[in-house]
Amino acid sequence: MARPAIGSPALTRRGLLLASASSLFLAACGSGDGDDEGVQSGPTRGPQDLIIGANLELTGAGAAMGILQERALRITVDTLNEEGVPVGNLRRKIRLVVQDNGSDPRKAAEQAAELAGREQVHAIVGGTLAETSLEIIKVAQEAQLPFISLAAADEIVLPLPQRTFIYKLTPDATDVARQLSRLISSQKLRKITLLAAPGLHGNSGVRAVTQALKTGGAQLTRTVRLPAPGADLGSTADRVVSSKPNGVIVWASSPSSGAAARALRAAGYQGPIFFDAGAVTEDTLSDANAKAVEGSFVVHPSALSGSSLTNTTSAGLARRDFVFRYIQEHGSFSGFAPYASDAVHLIAGAARLANSVDRGRIRVYLTRQVTEGIAGSYAFTPIRHSGMEPDSLAVFTVTAGEWTRIS
Image: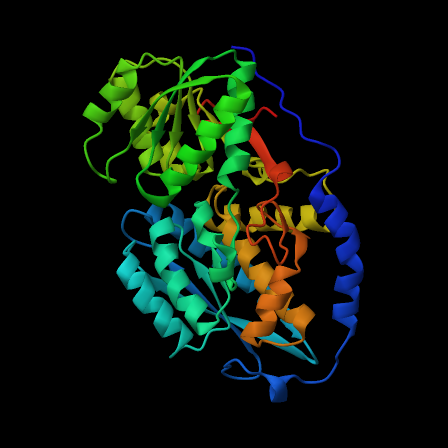
């Protein structure tokens, strides 16, 4: 099979924003040298602490993603704490408060309330599942507490008037679907079946894929929804195969992605499988899934390929250092992990620019952040709180059990 080359425009919205944002960054870094403790409207505990709450799925259905995020959080916090975060005339240490929501939305809400109240955090990171993120949002918005979600569902930041303190780092479904559509067209595939997860993540995928394939010229012959994680997928795979597709898009998060691929192969499907970015965890490439996913494709932020030794920009060096530390501590690098690292850097950067750990001021400066992160590039604006830029995405295929970039 010929491997497609998919390009992206040279001039991007992020490039224009980066140019205009540099003066804002320099001005914010140089203004207000005084201690800000007397003007904070938000809570704090100890003048030296920037307190970040982590509400993560360390057990349950989302553990495959949540554990990666906790690893990344601890690496990044340890790195930043070597010198501290300059906020006004102080260098604050980051204090990380990690809680396991067990992949339970109700528990996630309870813990978010505890982080906002008793722990008095300045921001929350977490929610790798859309459903847990949605419950955290309700608490964070009411408490006017900045929340950076790590889940993949467009509804997390929409409607914006009801999400003023909410941000999302994962790619928008529309951008991923467009890349998949171009890839499918380059392979001259015409009959596509979509196998989508239940819930908000799957809903975003159904909308985005339907529109992208229509524009790209391929026919979406059938949409099948996956059952809840852990359920038997035999009958679901049979429905997909009965539509006789020559390409299947699996729009689901790990571990459902790998399980879906196994079920499709067991049902007799031999054609190409295309994943959205939620598939990228160690579980998808596990021994149990290896044969089923070999040769499949995924659209994911380019950080999945690690860090190039020839990239000597500040962002490139930071990415290289993160990947090195991650491999040193955990043996291998996971492309999904950097989201949480970027979240910490964004919060620390907002506090630095604001010269304050006030929740409201952190929110304001999150909205103005235009930056190159570990996972990708972000350009938040007052009317866009989903910051991952389309040109951060790349196409990968599974070759000999590893993700290999092809564009």
